[in-house]
Image (tube, rainbow, N blue to C red; front, top):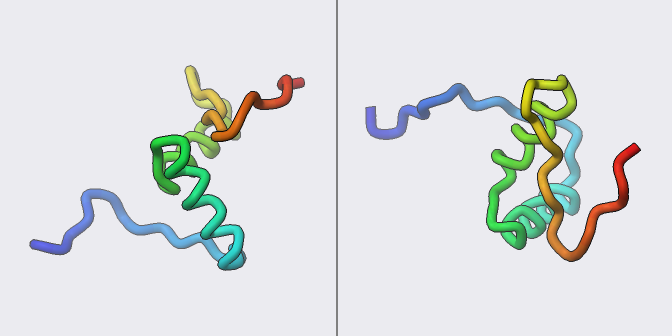
Length: 65
């Protein structure tokens, strides 16, 4: 199938347009995309082995607790 996705599409509700657009711009500035950033955050949140928070563009991140 020409338009079949490799992975199922998953929607995220409750995200306003400004946040969506800001995430897109930040991800592009970091040389990434929204999906990759979202996956990395989820993997870090559920404590997957080796998962790390993705780097944010525009300087150093604050120290982690």
